Amino acid sequence: MHVILIAGGWSDEREVSLSGARQIRTALEDLGHEVIFFDPAEDFKNLLPKAKQADFAFINLHGTPGEDGLIQAVLDKANCPYQGTGAAASYLALNKAAAKEVFEARGIRTPEWQLITPPQGTEAPLELNLPVFVKPDKGGSSLGMSLVEKNEDFPAALAKVFAMCQSALVEEYIPGVELTCGILDGAPLPLIMIRPKDGASFFDYENKYAEDGAEEICPAPVSEAITAAIQAQMIVAHHALGLNGYSRGDFILTEEGNAYLLEINTLPGMTPTSLLPRAAGAIGMSFKELIAKLIEVGLRDKAE
Image (cartoon, rainbow, N blue to C red; front, top):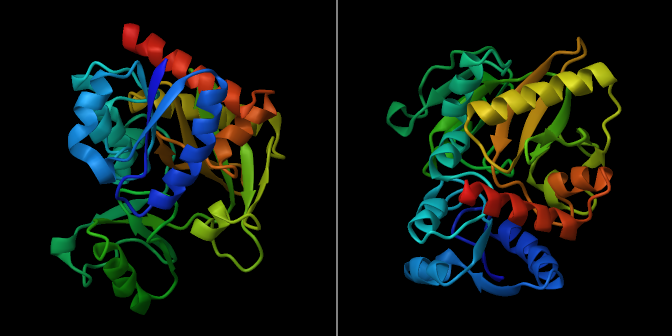
């Protein structure tokens, strides 16, 4: 097939996107596909005509554009199939506050939260008990995130997010271990436990992408009952948001055994250190086989 590989973009996660694209391109070529690389940051106005000429689009974008559904909307206009979720559900999932409203409506446990917008300013009152996380409402890779433990540090954390032209999601800090659960073609993948390296207060950008970053254990060393409960919760959340193909959810597991869903990523990372390929590997699926599966499911979803 003639595959257009869409990566790069103009978000703060551009370099992560490009890193993953190199590995994806190799896999696509090994599968016998003709690959054309396309960076919307360099040539956005030609996306529609180039997509019309392609048999399939493989999207490896993070943040905006990509996870916000913009690229998917253009591909839909070109009648070009792609892997993963469509435009509307992508936008819903990227907006953490909106996604949390959906989780709560479906009875899915998520940390208490508050949305603060730039018009409210850095002096907006904190409605949650400290400590709290402050993060961009749209975005990923933990960019712009702060752990706030003192009231006097709260305005600076908000200013950090507002400088990224974002609204701020303020989230209750839940002590526990971080677990991630992937979904592939409607079925849950093995859980991964994430242990940030010594000195890190949370799973930040460096922990995610540095070679000496966080320890990632797969399958996660938790009971079968906890594993099954989190996987079931992830399936409910995946369908509640209207997602397709694949996704990856981040959870916090407390000492009491309660799991809290933080957020869901509709275009999980595809770098050598990324979590979803590692979980797929735990069930014997190579990276090349994972790429082939995502194309298969994307073509099937488009035909339905």
